[in-house]
Length: 221
Image (cartoon, rainbow, N blue to C red):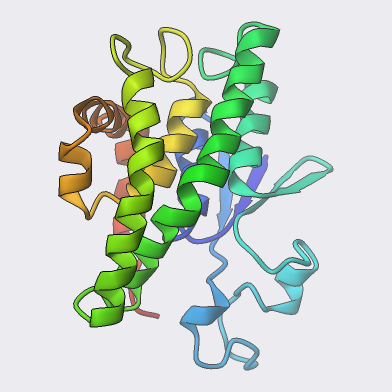
């Protein structure tokens, strides 16, 4: 059985969404981010990214990780590419060319988009969105996102999905990366194709199932 390490309120959310899309049976190990705990190494601390038991799984001390049989993997977007290829179906590439495009868009999401969107979500997570520094961080990130969003806006003109004529792992990976910026409504209103696309992605039953479980997790530890 697939084991997913990480709480839903983390980058593990995208792996849980993928597992739901594929209809996989999985075991969830709720590893917390150490930064959310005052004393992550205390003897009574919940399992977290600094816990020795988790470090044995991922020496980088980051979530998510998975264990699938004898395979242990880290890096959420790579995990999803692996799961798509392993289980096949419409989320995976149907040709070598599609495999290449799924990888290209996933790497693009990781390199061109997520470094900017994560600054936005962390500003909110840390309660700094109304501070001068927080507002500056959000404004700079939004300005920097205009170019990649313009590229995506053009790519989505006349099409419903990123690769081919169906929802794939590329849509899932990119939608989860862009979710971190959805607090900035004007950014998406300025890119209507992107806005409509991410709404299609997030209307899927598997996404709603993931979010329902995520919503039950406590925000404060």
